[in-house]
Image (cartoon, rainbow, N blue to C red; front, side, top):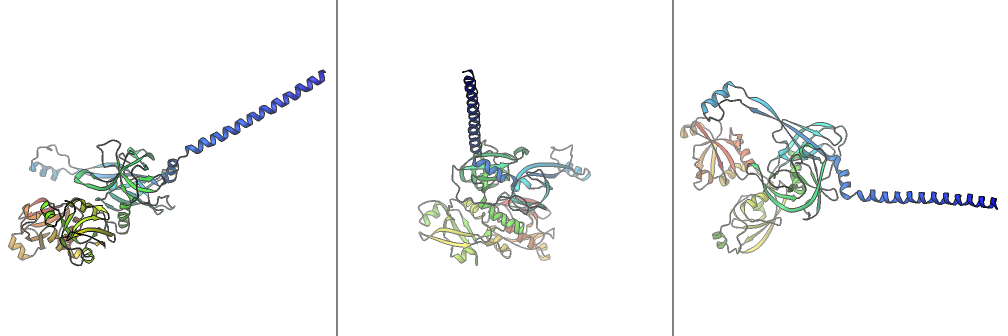
Length: 469
């Protein structure tokens, strides 16, 4: 009996051991399954996007050299003291640094960022996500759209993000912003698209158009970084230009950036698209005259010969209501919309003629340089010529550099602010004008803006004037 009892106890212990081992193994098995499920659930779409795109986001450090003249009499406002100390006290150089972000858009080292990140920079340093540093060169920049392209040279191909599209964005969809706010590398914020087609006023009376508004944090240093959708597609370029509101960010739609980037890489500048018309505000009187029930749109006041607009069939007196399905509500709205096109873009214009709605399609062209003087006559109301001995004698001119205004339309903006025949244009938007060829290039560049700054010389004296045509 004792042997049987002992054997029974031994067998029972074996069963208990095996059962306990099984329970332990089963518990570990279940734990591994639960842990695996927890791990999988934590790898959200946002985590996967950041891992995929993060290596293509870069830090941009710029350095600007600023010259300042020490002047103990600064603030007295006496031109004598200013001139005296400018002559005898050499300027001192100060270095100013700033930070921003960028995104690699191809394997060859081209990086997309904001123009305000690299403007006035004497040197640009790019730091990759793996901490490697490179000196970068500026390929091209456009202040009107706040887009710039820089390039670094590497032996190995760079990780990059292909540009997506922004014409199908949804208000309320999730977006992801990556950048380097305040120099803190690889910071990720998320949010939703709050609004589309926002117009934002920035410093220096600049107005940026067609922005994406989002509630993800966009702080200094985020500028130039990518805005991504939940699929990891590049849909915009973040820009920190609006500092008055917390929790509000803005981004440039990638469709708008694409056109600019192609021109910057190909030419180093933007070749603005030209359709060949001038337009004016619609007043209540004009609306009544043309039999329009609603005060919206702009009136075509001039169609240039052999321009895309003339070839498409637009005429003086047509009222433009829409451009590419975007409502045209004012002259400013029209200028903002048309300035977003580069040469070669197709544009669809909906308009009214004789109370009937019509539509035309045209292809924009570069602004022709050989028509700059004609554009100046129509746009600014001024006729100019090279400075000759005859004109020097006629108008008592004291310089041989610049172009002389020989005639003004009496109702032009230039005439109304006091410019006279015989005045010499020395600068246009700070660009030096020595001869008529300089004038032509400067006028074409100036047509991208809503106002033009002139340095005009009359006799021995010069003065600045701003004309808003």
